[in-house]
Image (spheres, one colour):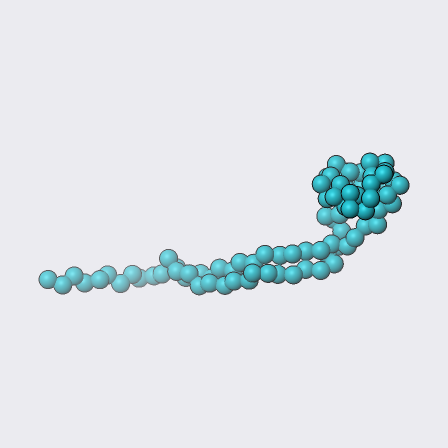
Length: 93
C-alpha cells in the first residue's frame, strides 16, 4: 500500500530582512560653567557624568523646548548613519 502525498494548493512565501542601524547626531558644545554639577571634574569625569546623567541634566536651549540635555541631543540632525549585520532570507509557510 503506497500513500499518496497531498500537494497543497498554495504556499505563503515572504522575504525577511534584518539589520542594525548606528546613527550619530550633530554635537552640542556645552559650556561647562553653565553646569555647576560639573565643577571640579576633569575631562574624563565630565564625560562619564554626562553619559550617565544626560536625561537629568538641563538642556542648552534657552527657549525651554526640551526637558533634558538627552532629549535635545536625540533631536539633532543625523550626521552619519551606518547599517550593520544586514541579512536577507526567503521563507515559506
